[in-house]
Length: 516
Image (tube, rainbow, N blue to C red; front, side):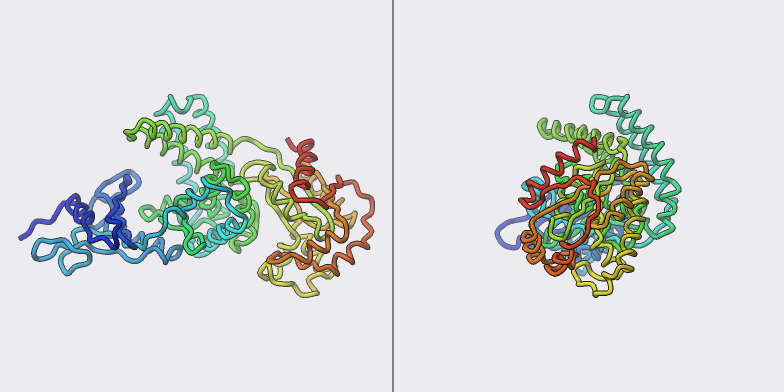
């Protein structure tokens, strides 16, 4: 009887697979997996290891993990994940991929992709476009929509355990993390999590705690045929992968924020909330700073541990620098920030929405202000895609009042959650402007109103050139608006007839005097 081969022997066999093409076989090692790249395929083998958070120590556990990886990733990345593949021992003692002999190891068989299209690579090269940001938001919304529902109590308990694990891990590296700062972070984390307990439980009751991807950072997203694909989900632990959908989203937002991709992070944050049909209440924003902190803290301690095992001195110092950077972000995410409301009014074509998205990343705590638009809310209430034209009855006085009421309630909830907001609407009537100022005052939030102006010909040219936007405004609508009686204008007027860069500079200069 031929004795079963060791895992090292299986790995050597995979290194000698007949290559497709002239590239040979490339091996990539991580702490838990070994990946072999050959031609158009990739084979991932689970290391025979056991950690506190995963156990691949037996063949049966590795088989289950490979099957679980296929199951967890197929819905998000069917173009990558193919099957759990046995590596078999043939009767003549040779090893084979999916042969007729007894399985002695298991691998995840995948289609290869161009690693230069991974999002972390793209984020290092240039700002991520608004179009790709929108598609990333849709990717996350779709993933969460398909994710199985779980309970909120278990998720809260896991967060509490992470706080204590982080505290212990940070104290192991006093040369990286000053003890007083570690104490401050841990005390703040415990206090904030205590205040969030009821919110997390309620979000669980509303189906917003789910078995998500669990590891949705930049290196686990790749562009395939120009579309973002989420891959390499956590398969080894339901507990780690289970969380509030905003906690899952927070990994991507935090990673982008740390890379300086603030506009992209803010855009994904806003467009995700616009697009998702799971969450129609913004009270979860109260938990987002804690979620961002937790993602940064976990990345920090992982980088610190990785530095210990790094032999190359330059790489070791790079890991230590990354650990310090993530730790500083973790502290910063919990810094208090008073809520502010910026209202941007103006006739159609003045560039309100473009200005709102230009300003939002720099207002309030990460990932910037929540942008709320009457055009988006109108389509949401109607159950229409944003770019589908609404019927004429959607613009009656009664219908418009319903839109403003819904947005007013949302604004109150956003401000109550401690988050800043930008309200994008025409605001042509004096009572509309007064009403939104009153909402901010009752919420004890700072307020600044901006009124954009531009020549009629400019307004009509911009409206006529629109495509793929939630607004249904036409040049006829502009003509009608030009006849409005605006009443007494107390908001700061900004000439928006020039370039958006010029308008943004003027608006920022104005807001800098009101918002710290």
